[in-house]
Image 1 (tube, rainbow, N blue to C red):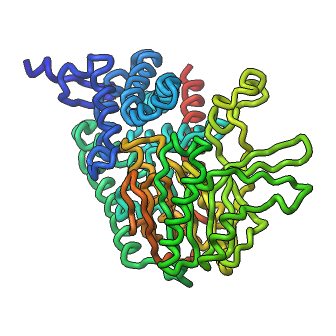
Image 2: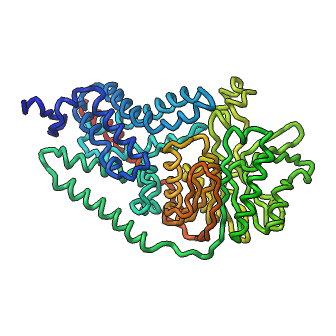
Image 3: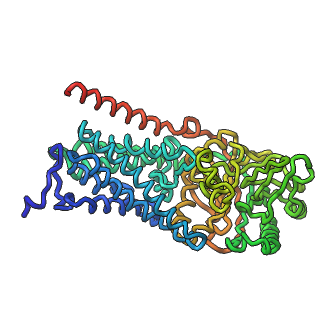
Length: 527
């Protein structure tokens, strides 16, 4: 009986996991479900640190199996993760049944990426015998990095984001950025595995390595928590959350009512004496149609009059159609109106557009197929990069919609001189799913990475103010009208991550290349 419940993995690593390792899907699926919990805002830290263990047991038992077998197991692992964490897409079915197809396609695509990472890691494990604590970052992070490129770039599922709800623990992100946070979680998972399934019962080395890793991170976190960056100035900012339902937002007959709601909330916000009032993404119900040959068309009369009447600057999201003869470029834009009612000539807009919704991906290939199908291909143009708006002498960065998930944009704005950054968005698409809080928590990461305050302003929530330590204040509830005002700290410190960017990803890529080359060379010598 005892012998039947004990399996010995390749490399002589013993572990008592019964016959579960014989199943093609059980342990990979268990690992996937554990990792999925790490993405849920349940304030549970344990899944982040041990989720990979069942998968590592399963892989170690199959190191000599064909790579296709390990790839299939990795795919099951990835599918269990992403079918669970992408469940929020059910909220979009009421908009289009295509959401079901998109849900399955995205989950499958992400699962294939996970399968590639686990297959690479297990191949290196078989050939080198190195610890999973080394191999997981080398195989996982380069695949994550590759997903950030191209017309369908994605970062929401990146492992480092799962610590967004634990601002104290993630203070070290100002050194290593999101890939460094992901590397930390992968290393800890690998070291925990070495503790529970040690080769030849050697536990001292992984125990020491684990204590050193955790001690270094928590020690730095504690020091940073007690040494926040000093503010060079403060700006009082008010946010307006109008809570306009999607159906009304898209109905031209509701434009006047939307304008009335915005006006009422802005008047209420002005009583807080802010230097800036921020509206959400495309809050202005009517697009701005600007004929570049007629300067007088560059105007938002009602917004300008409102700003002047209340003596406050307004940052307004609106669709922007820039017309030059027969050419019309449309942007998901943000405009600044000063307290005297002047519309700034500098504007900014969303850079990373949603594929198939705002932009046709791979346009040279798919353009002919999707041309004229605005409901599928979109018709927006990306905005200017790293553009800041001047508010009373302070440079303010602006991100639109889900761009809070893209750390490179926040970093670029910081390097362009932004004293703080505003995120304007409309998250009504996600209903009351847990993705609402998950996405809002990623703002904490962006604040810590650059030691910069961020202001999140969402049409239906969650809105709020995040300080350079990643702490929320003035956080609003979902699906209620709201006005909040806070004094926002303006900082000019540049962190290691702000200066040097994603160097951890490059280290992992170089490590993977060198490890793979070393294995190939050794195989050549023994052939």
